[in-house]
Image (cartoon, rainbow, N blue to C red; front, side):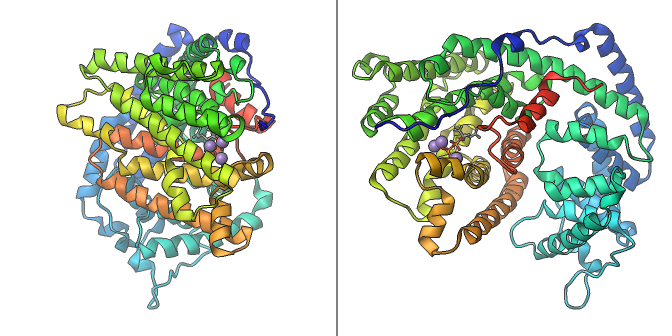
Length: 537
Ligand code: F3P
Ligand code: MN
Ligand code: MN
Ligand code: MN
């Protein structure tokens, strides 16, 4: 008996997507944005005070326009890092801001800078009423922590309690800039927020700031709208590709989530030069979403075994024993991989087909392991589960494909990036797996699926569901700390790291309170529209 999960069909209409058109394509807007950008650059060079510089960098990052000023920002941070930092030691906001921005940009920063704020017992002693801005800054900074940095753990504990109290007390003061930032940050901290998503929100919040800079705001809005036209063209292209592949029609048991998959793409990277990486991510994610449902919902154990073996052989000549719908799946994957490998070969002169094949094989094997667990009624220990599940969440697959679509010329010894999964991939995947389990397990329980982390945890330790959820949240936190450190120490090119971390951020947002990849409720529909379809007025 086949299972069914009754997934809603896609809510996005093909003709609607193809009809997208924005006036921001016009040349005059580009010219206008170049003028505003130059104004921004001049202004940036005039700011002298270090705290003001850091504040401005923070604003530029949140407005999504920092990428226009990469060199200016790099020089500024180098200067700030080189100078004697003693003058800031008493100003919590300045210190925490400096810590956060410098650590974010890879500088070596010790959390010991905060010891001046500790009492003899090693606890924070800050007069709470006076410096709520400093408290917020320390809270945001604490999310950059590494394992073992207990000062930052304490900082997060201490500040979150104060911020929660403040937020409750100031509910009436809605619209006040600082209150907006605090509520937003308590929901999801800045470090865990996906870039475009955050930018769209911040452009609105920034308008309530007393000291906001209108020309920067105009630039941010214009730049957002111009980039959006590029994103729309990419979505139109992948949606034509998806229509040609035509899997959803053939496999109507599965989720058809092309637009949501592309949405992951703009969460991962938004700059124009990463276009190919984004469209590749959208393609691979739509494919994986369907194959996941094949394994989790529709396929019989026998079919899944045949399919897993076919992917392992990777030989179109040997697919005669598959049912037609599985032949179609095989060819969709096979052709997609060949096309991507061909592009890569043209640019880099290397054949990466073996690496791409390997990630598909790994994924299908991990899916099949879960299917066997399901059919035999086996519940693994949490550790055994995770060892398989960080592959079956598809992030290693997604990242490997988007890495190979970055316009980056690989040196000879850099192909090792593809040979085995780097730690940064593993951490990004583990975070996504855990948060996905927290939000998708209700559906998965209802329609029949392998036990996910919560059940494994309950089964292993006999704890309540609430306790198991807390444990999983704690693991998410710990994995973020590992990833923070790895982002600092890794020898991967920075753009690879950024993409991997951004996917983890995207999962913190997509799965914040529900499974927004699957459910298609009005809230996520509005979110997708506001980021991809509607220009900011
Ligand atoms: C395959 C799916 C997901 C996980 C894929 C991950 C992304 C897009 C980062 C969304 F589409 O759903 P699901 O909850 O069923 O995955 P799972 O691995 O739990 O079966
Ligand atoms: Mn699934
Ligand atoms: Mn699955
Ligand atoms: Mn899931």
